Amino acid sequence: MDMKAKGDYDHVVALVRRGRYWGAISKSNHVWLRWRDPVYRSLRELAMSYLHGYVSDYNHISLRSYSRPFDLRRCDPALWITNEESCWDIAWDLDQSHHYDLVTPSQARKLRPHDRIQLRAGEIVEHPP
Image (tube, rainbow, N blue to C red; front, side):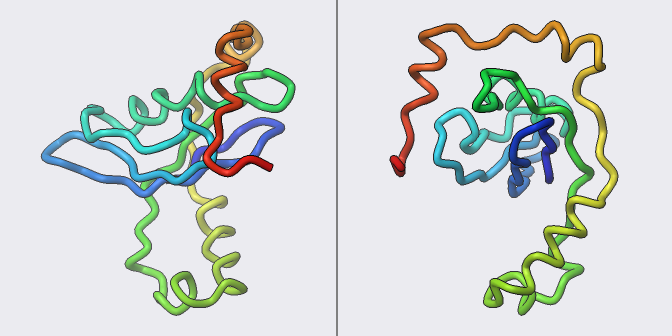
């Protein structure tokens, strides 16, 4: 599933389903965007769990939409497992898939920026620059 951000990088997660509940396997340098246990009743609910952790370099909550599930089984594995150049075709297809809004423009304007402690916590990364 792709999650699009305004003025920031998108984030892609591998969906996990246990029974009727959704979770995600996710690799990120930042603690806010890592995996989620399969406890969410819908993909929207799962995507919303990433909302407040998705903060741009300018301290704006930037996550805006999420895609339908993208099934990699319909793609030739040679395009995304072993070939770094060809994986961009799949990234393009994922980016072009149907996305659903998470917040309205009015809600987006009223999202509170992170406070000092949240910003400090966001500086904890696995791979420092």
